[in-house]
Image 1 (cartoon, helix red, strand yellow):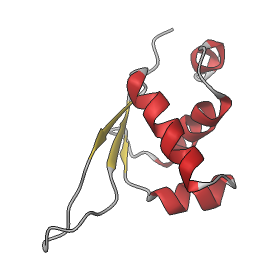
Image 2 (image 1 turned 180 degrees about the vertical axis):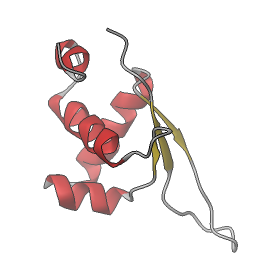
Image 3 (image 1 turned 90 degrees about the horizontal axis):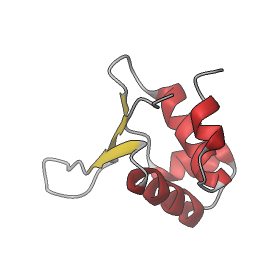
Length: 88
């Protein structure tokens, strides 16, 4: 079975599956990436709200870990996402 075979079988919305594959595709060798919500939404042709719901789904089901990042002035920056390995 393919790498994504496990997530295909999970009972999570298709939006979460699409966002997971997007994050996995953009992650570095350590499994981290930091695309902005607007970037994800634009690239996947989804709304910002849909992307936010998908990220919540993935976090609740343990597929990603989300860590907020901040600029030097204390304002929000893109989150750091750690893509967790899927257990077969």
